[in-house]
Image (tube, rainbow, N blue to C red; front, side, top):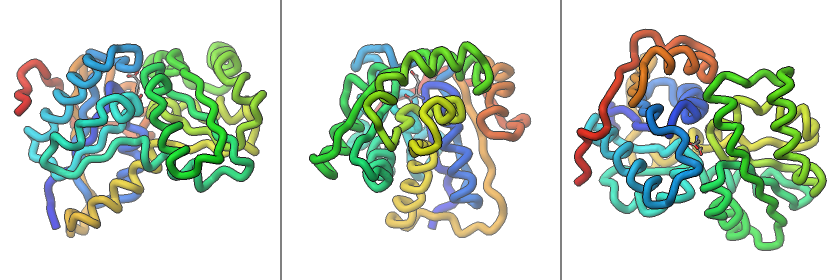
Length: 273
Ligand code: DGL
């Protein structure tokens, strides 16, 4: 048992899709979220830069005494694969739980993966799917503009810009007849309706935030780290850019206000051991 908080980070706001699910799955846990809003997006940066940013994010959370770390970021999970071995607490990214859920969901054996360019170039989801079943067919598409749309609040499925970008990126996957699509970036569940409107209800969307929250709950249980509190946990947020901008957009992700639980931090001061 441990009453320490669960640490969770992303390059920006996308990881809040995982926070929302984590609150549903583990309502009694305290959560500390870090969004690297000053440096988002990560998805078009080099491996070296993504690894450095991921280490700084994780060590900031460790400095807050967290009992577990979740990289709620498809890009970090795909590229900074050695981070797990560096940390003194249990760690999970989003790739393994999400890929496994897609393997369970597909009926026709044709799975689509969308993510940032770094995620797609790493082949992380594809490799994990094929590790589970090498007969499956995997089709990948990077969708970097989805991150900008979401970070800037262009999320309505009725919005012509959203519809146009969705169609442009997903027409190839529609043509390939995928029946399951991995939303491999934690920003993407926010525009899931627009994606679903375009691909049709028969295509199952796999939300990396949801699957990772479920997996994290299992991991905590296995390590004997679940809290035994019975009251509602508290969620505290840290960002590297302005607090006000985060507050506004975070409401869209969480469907609730983050109140005054947000602070600005300067990551340059984080010490990596
Ligand atoms: N939410 C992040 C991901 O899952 C990323 C967006 C980015 O920083 O490019 O990949």
